[in-house]
Image (cartoon, rainbow, N blue to C red):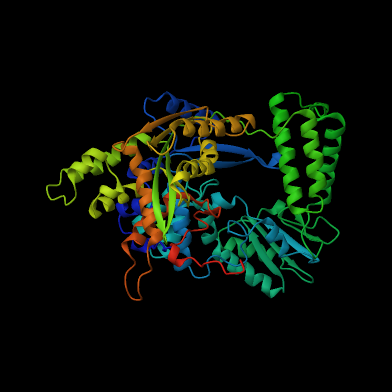
Length: 598
């Protein structure tokens, strides 16, 4: 189970920072952020950060101006959170659970955007085969959801006004809801709930079907549809504005599209014929004349732009193959041959943006699963490694300075801050500190009953997650701090990381500019984070549910404090991935497989 986050219980600024899952410095920096008005201003800000002596001076956000498909419509501004990215991810999940308990009807069943298991194809399928269609767009959907509107929503749901205002400022940029923050989709669906209710009622009155995908509103039917004037009135009454030039009706035989897919076929949506025709033509010329010559014939001569075109066509092949399975084998074969003949491939080389180095702290632990030994590797990944060590040291020193400490001070001084040596009070103190630290956790585990296979299992676990971690350190130095382990060859560990790096480089895939590996002993305070991640997870997995009427066990509550820090938990034995969208459960709560494997 996932514990709901009830923000109505948060009454102070300090409690809000904890509920968000960030630290005070990050919170203050985000509230004080003044968005650059031009690209030149952003470049200057990045240069100032690059010249700073401290790696803590990471930009709060990066601004990306992405041209719209119709370039005459300008561009979309997307904000990439850097300083507070883990906190925003945590907050997005917690707001989702909060809205489900505090906002009746959330999320509306007609909403297909930003919901797990729903996508553009599912949205289009709801209208497949209908003879009449009304498509409408909301003008500046995200920016029109202002800070004041978000604060009003939180206040209406029972948050203390001061807390509602602070939280609204944290999730908005420049006075509006931004594209790019993990929290924006969740909040937009909550703010738009009254609109969805009104549009669904409007559709029902015309015996039509209504869906919304982000800012795309769609009504379909076989007879009548709502009048555009009536729709405009509903939209404006809910605080939004119709994009008049993107509001249109269509019938079968015309451009009958929903979220980019044709819905003329009652059986299923399809990629529009013209888009498929252009792709077939592109692949034909690429195969006949060669990819580079084909693009040069179109006036593209710069090698960098040619590579961008290769990436574009590769994405289009994947898109069409996904939505048109019958075409997939031929399209993939044509494209693969054209790439091989030219010695080319899609490239996602490092972007070279300013980022601080990545610190990757690695530790291992052993669990017991019903008599079966389990080996686990944990990683804590952060661009604030020194800060993490400082905060661990602060917690440890505070405990050692307590004359009533009931633990073993000598062990703590010798081995550092580790779960097995810490008292329950010290464990809780450090877990509370971890809640606000800027890092992400990764764990891989597998059965390991045979001691002779320990090293092999360790390397298999590390290999299962290392490429993804190297990709995440794109364009920066990745510094590994790995706890020494006499059962595992340091040479083989370094070789495994080197091999993963070389594979990414050979594919011209995302990767760090370089990496370094250092093996450290127990007192190293950077290792405290993965040590606690492993111990807290292990105790959670072995925990038993509370008896009816009894409070949840401490082991489960401690894990819930850190749940959002675990970006990925991978059971390598069954190759099952657990994440925020697929939460892991204690072993006693998991449903065992049936005898027939169903």
